[in-house]
Image (cartoon, rainbow, N blue to C red; front, side, top):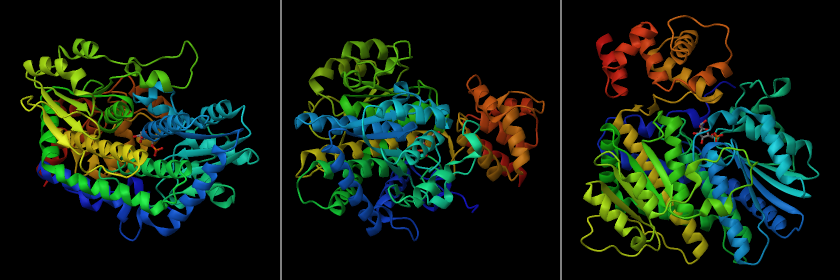
Length: 561
Ligand code: F6P
């Protein structure tokens, strides 16, 4: 079957998201968020009865493991999928500890702990390391419920782990979470997978194995095509929270009811749409004027800030400095997997006190945007005062517990606190997190749309940092320029290697490695080469005249008609 996987298709709702007003961006992203529940075209989304039955089966399995002394639950994924797994595992372990139960959840993320806060995309392509990590983490246990998340049903890292589980069913129960039918699982071979196996082979095997579970509701294309951190990430979080919460409670609450709570809470977010639109506009202005966006938060709220920031690098080829998250407490220190002493530890994993933050923020470019996430106002007040003296813009996202602000503080408040209500504290916290996730996704996606990093609903400056993104880049170039596959690939490779010469002998891995030292608009330059039928050198000269990358598409289209 050749059709394009849902997760890579173009969402009909957002085809013109790049040309509307900022309020329109906020509204369209909101509507897409609801597609996760309501479904897309003839698909039913998370409210589908059959899917809910599968969730119930999983709740039973998680419950059994929680009661089994020799059992653990391992959650694994790449990029945002791995980060959401980390958050779920640490949050529900905390719940176990509060109830005097052993912490049963473990996480694995491709690329290790640093990948929790920075983009380490290439690790996604290694099924062997994936399996080795799973073996290591589960060594001393007899029963392992393994949950592998890959929104696109594509990541070889997760594929290798599922394969290892399928080969050892006496110990492992494998679960695959993704958002494409098995027939659309990725069939591209990666060199590190022996005997030409692909994710499709593993997904098919999963489907045919009665002990295995495939959870793959069809939630429809992403608002920005391929940006699986958005709907994919949202659905992943809701699925994990729902299962783990229900497995840990004795209440007779139904799966459907929990899912419904997520849906109504997300729907209520529209009450803050105008305030959110103002902040999206400011965030867009920041990126256009070389100012920066910063998130500050504690515990899992802080992690969500970092997750949102880290995804902008591969998705929009933004610089590490454009959007960054900071952690205001020592959440990571308490929750990270142990790693070998000499492994790299990203500085972003450290706690930042208000004094540390001031040292870092003191020299921010003027009119930067600092977004505080529901943290203690009193402890940040003097930092905020100093930032305001420097004329930076301050935003406060109010979710649950933050104290009211002083009336004269000039801080813009986006207040979701009245929308986040549940009779259960655990659910309420999970609801606050999803609201936060969607709020930050809207800000960073909207800002990049305003910066011109999106044409129609396509990420036209994607960073080609793994095999999946290499092929996505070729598809984008083909689609927008109308050239054939060979021409798109040739131009992409020349752009990666910054040369006018044709390179025929190098492998995809060598191309991806070369991307690390050339971060400059690789896809836009290749696109321009195809659109204008010009050389790499000529395209680089032209690109300098385009302040907004999307103008390449509009200008070139206009001049050729
Ligand atoms: O390779 C980049 C990326 O698409 C991230 O943006 C995403 O979070 C990650 O890969 C994982 O994707 P998936 O969940 O489809 O495996």
